Image (cartoon, rainbow over all chains, first blue to last red):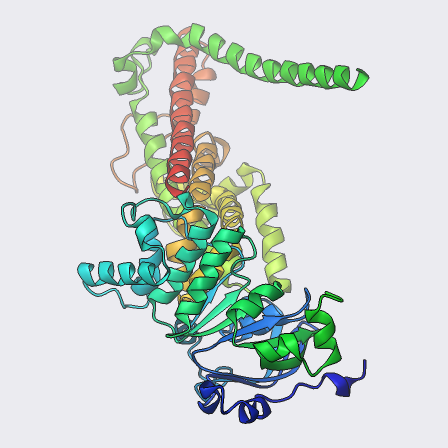
Length: 278
Length: 280
């Protein structure tokens, strides 16, 4: 495989071509990476990633294990900062400002860019406190009734309210796996981010719980820009508007999801989405 | 068939060893009980030392022990927990950190008499604390500090990283993450380590003798600058008397010390279970 064959095409081409059928393509990108490299000590995990992610759409990152899709996702809210030996080169612009620039408030960035993890990680506290935590630490709690209203709103947005409204004081660990994951989504939504990053949010869930998460993602894109990492190609096809295919730390192809799955430009993408490897 | 026999044999062996250990402890307690139970009374608990064994009590040593342990805890726990948080959460993983880590482990193994000599030189003489509760507690605090640090680090390390990530991802600062998420989860482990450390301190005799805690005081300590004695020293004092009546006092003193220790350990277990239940 020669290098030239897998050089990513910029979204500008895609956007220009799709102008008629995709109004979002006209908007300025919400997230834009330019020449992003990522290193774990000496190992280069991401090589020269450039991508422009549109607001209020769902963008899926697909690729085989170890291809860098999760690593790239975690550069978008600087979650990799807490890994010793991790190093980033290049730029990531969110709303046109470089989140790796000098003097960036990482804590504030993470409030604006929410994240849901592969394995649901509710805090060992009550359901209410799980959702209220982000509000409290960010000084957004307000009065008791404000806080309660905000918690309810977030739980409703995550389609969990009806199941938990009578037991908000129960430990979050008493919920089922799917409910725990929706609680984590509610928790992320409570602090009103613009962007929601989801790292294989349904990979540990059964099909019914997965379906609920997918429906939720579909609803949430009206309000949020969503980036979802998935190893499940059917899921990417079902929930996303755009799909980016990563391979060996490179972005191979990035296009509208329907095109990626029916008529990809790169042979490698075609082989992957048709299940010939990975 | 042979495998099952082996399994059964091992089980029997383990049970035997367990019974042996528990049996010797029970025999020890029974022996002490036989010698000392007759001396246990309210008057013994509230009495002061006396030249006549039958009048002698343990009030001064019991209050001394409790007082010293409380001050030891007040000194060792905040410093130990803070050190552990620094080493585990903030400190860089470099060569210096390794050196400090190895030395803390080494310090935990230093004989307690060495701490006593350090306490004598540093607290009693150089810092002019005299032979006070404060000097004794400072010495014991140094002694148990490594244990507190090691136990706290273990407890912090056991907190799953997914919890930290979840907190950071909501825009929490490092301190908020530690204070609101990590510490509450680590608390049962920290409490257990703390009480085990203090249980060790309460039985220590050598370092307190070497800093010059009195073996005969006729009063209970009323401030951290008072001279004091503690239960093990009082027991040691009685044991070394030739009169058989004082031996009975010593046995009764041991029973008091043991009950104090068992109460502390029971408290540790209760606290741990209580907090673990709250979390799950």
